[in-house]
Image (cartoon, rainbow, N blue to C red; front, side, top):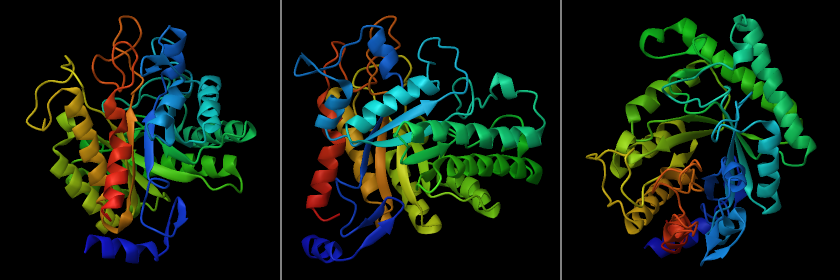
Length: 371
């Protein structure tokens, strides 16, 4: 029955933000991605990546394991401490490496000098005291200038995130929402800033098509998704695709992710990407025991979690599941090198782990089964 359904679907064109295909999402359309924004910094510090104990280029290793997309963050004026190094020249260099390996590029604007996430959405220091109208214009002009620089270097992103994990808004306090900031004025400001960023992408890209992603955390929380994107639609923010983060110890079990992705696909009729995920292959101090931990902290457990996440995205109704990205897979747990013990896709010696193939394995198997 599944095979018959699959064969019929092969004849039906699918059109979405990544173009039209003559079959359901497959290996050539489904994004298997890695956020390797720290790669050049780690390489400069002496990290060597290996495959079968032989040194190799990180991008080539990822490509060999089925990855077809790279995500890169960009800060406004980073302090260059640790791995907060992602200014424009640095990010352009990594983008060139991604494009040289024929990989899709997702550019992630943090609109900050440092990390922007649900706990903090700090303005860049140079923007801190701007009146709101000037801030809005600066978001547009800065975004446009970055996109223009990428286009000039022939590495125009295929997709752009306007902010990072923006569930509580961005560019606080002007664009903060939720909690004490849950009112019409704050939502008007926040969505105006989003629209300014989107306008900047369009301005910088010119006639070229660039997909716009809005990214929240809480990938397993349907109620958060409903609240956030209902407001986004209320204020008529023009976007193409939804990105969510999914780390089980914070965002729920696989079943919770499944429920949320089903909701996104059916309620908002939008394509969705799990744009950040990760799981330890060894015990880790940062990841406290959680009732959401459904897999052991072993290389096999890491593989199984990543396979399950990929399958869940592929199962989203209407072929709306469009990809999975691993966050910080290049991490090597060595002192002084910015690594996170046991959380990357490489062992302490720099060898790529079998779990790196989990995404591609899931895509191949699920496609073969007609899903």
